[in-house]
Amino acid sequence: MAKKKLNVGMVGYGFMARTHSNAHSKVGHFFDLEYQPVLKAVCAPEADKTQAFADKWGYESIETDYRKLVERKDIDLIEICAPNNLHHDIAIAAAEAGKMVLCEKPLARTGAEGEEMCKAVEKAGVPNLVSYNYRRVPAVTLAKKLIDEGRLGKIFHYRAVFLQDWTISADLPQGGQALWRLDAAVAGSGVTGDLLAHCIDTAIWLNGSIKDVTAMTETFIKERMHTETGKKQAVGIDDACAFLAHFQNGSLATFESTRYARGHKALYTFEINGEHASIQWDLHDLHRLNWFDHRDESIVRGWRSIHVTDSDMPYMDKWWVPGLQIGYEHSFVHQIADFLDGLAKGKPASPTFREALETQHVCDAVLKSAKTGKWEDVSV
Ligand SMILES: NC(=O)c1ccc[n+]([C@@H]2O[C@H](COP(=O)([O-])OP(=O)(O)OC[C@H]3O[C@@H](n4cnc5c(N)ncnc54)[C@H](O)[C@@H]3O)[C@@H](O)[C@H]2O)c1
Image 1 (cartoon, protein in one colour):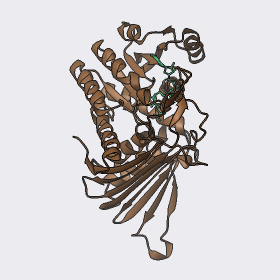
Image 2: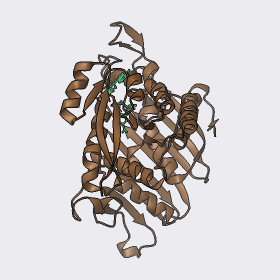
Image 3: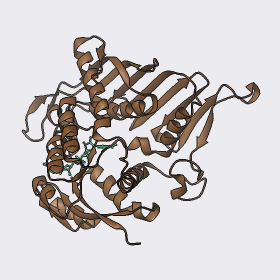
């Protein structure tokens, strides 16, 4: 049967636009879906670079203004792979034009912005999704299954870190491609909205809602040259953040993130300790899930490292044969596969804008607590 076409309008040609475009190109080869994405148009202000991206990835056309893109009759889905300060306006414009919206994380710079985005997609009744792609790494999806089956028993502890080391040099400017992350006006916050947002999304997904938090943040380098003004300007982002949290289920959590951990490029790890068992996951070794089960016979009890490649593991029946692992890019293929499957079944893939707003509220509470020095409740 001929597949239904889903015309994609991509905003941005940077890092995430590559992961999303790659996912669209591959998904139909590996998943049996009613819909087939068509790379219709890519949009960014710089026409030459946007055209080069279109040529490389096979987009049919380009736009240089997202307002034109969202108004186009031949576009069904707008994908927001642009810096955080643009998510709000693009998502609302897209929803008002009746387009589906797939937005990169974090949903917005603040909960207030996120709330307006939720209202816009809900009013328009358009399918929507936020790209918290780590949920769709098979080992992380397996962790969710094991927890939901009750295999860990009551959960006591959740521990997450996300460590990088790329902003240690004081010579690194703020603003512009990729470096917009160092500019608070564009990014909203530093490691909290960029890296901890991933950790918080996974944590809520695996272990339920977070009740309250107490946090500390630090900005190690107080001034950096701004690429747009050519002047040294104050740095407003958090370079590092650590916080404690209570989950609604009574378990305790520690979260830590920094871009000043020499030797770590993208060390996202989590560990969950339950009454019967513990699990650990590490992005640097993303196809493995470590598992310890106290119920094992004592003479063989110990941590085991599950190689998540067998065909009964989440998503793995769609790829190669047992023993052959997949990687980072595949989490985006799974994301679009789930989105398209959700469209066909009328059952939205998670996290929707509304679901992802919870992470935004936790980020807001973390940043507020770092200022007040007090425990802060997470808004609901
Ligand atoms: N899911 C993840 O793991 C993950 C990883 C990295 C980034 N992100 C998120 O993805 C988004 C984009 O990040 P990135 O790393 O791709 O950034 P990037 O700097 O590599 O690319 C940003 C793109 O946005 C375009 N852009 C800037 N202004 C624009 C405008 N007015 N209209 C249209 N396009 C515009 C730029 O030309 C550029 O192509 C951010 O929200 C970021 O937080 C998510």
